[in-house]
Amino acid sequence: MGIVVLGAVFVDIKGYPTSTYIPGGRNVGRVEQVPGGVSRNVVEDIANVELRPTFVSLVDDTGLGADAVRQLKNHKVNTDYVLPTPDGMGTWLAVFDNQGDVCAAISKRPDLRPLIALLDEKGDEIFRDADSIALEIDMDKEIVKRVFQYAKKYGKDVYAVVSNMSIAVERRDFLQQTSCFVCNQQEMGILFSDDYSEKTPEELKEILALKIRSARIPRMIVTMGSQGAVYADCTGERGVCPGRKVDVKDTTGAGDAFFAGATIGLTYGKTLAESCEIGTRLAASTICTSGNVCPRFLPEEFGLNVAVTD
Image (cartoon, rainbow, N blue to C red):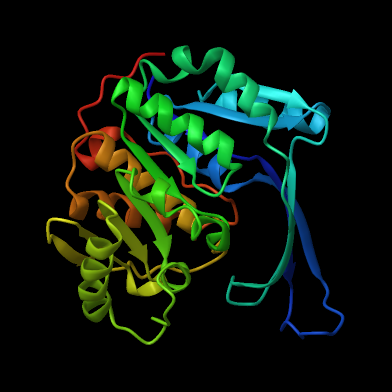
């Protein structure tokens, strides 16, 4: 069945200034509306490496929701478990500066609780043949709880990313059950109640190795923007994956692409270092475009020997 991804679908409304951005002022520019959401982006990124992921999510019971499903199907994502539901999608409104970074944003999260009944009814067929599971760890607690129950039942690795670290902080028991948890430098600071903004990658990798051992998190990767990423596991392995220098158009989706790449690597037998390199490559390719996802790659480009069937 490939990698099973669970999470929300958003509609992203993004504004770009055509001249120098003036905070608090009137800015002329262009406004785009594109499909978004962390997990939606992740599942499309995985599909763009010519893998065949399965998506478990909700969409609006409108033409907009149908369009979101159609786009995923065009990328050969299995959408059999994407349910049309009233108000099933979230909205993210963002304004970008001239460097392609978000300078203001507001989001409305959807209610994903209808997925509980879906997992109760079809959880066995969803997870039995999965290669691995990827999810947003800050979803409704009952959803996450059921996912880990099925993961344990069928011996599946769970890879986790986060949208709201303030929620994830209260779920350390779930983090301890993940095969790898991925977050950014700021989110790591929230998780471990400290400020790591001035740390170099070399410094942060040593701190991370100590922190995950005491927190009993098996493996963790922390992205650091242009500085790359650091990784560590509870056995003492740790390292730095340098970033790539590229022309930035839009940073939206870079973290999602990194997580997708790291999940792909770890799912199909790559080391932490190799998986971070795959994630870095997908993230770098994403920020060179104004879209939310990476362009297409072949599994062979990352040394993946994966049998894919249409």
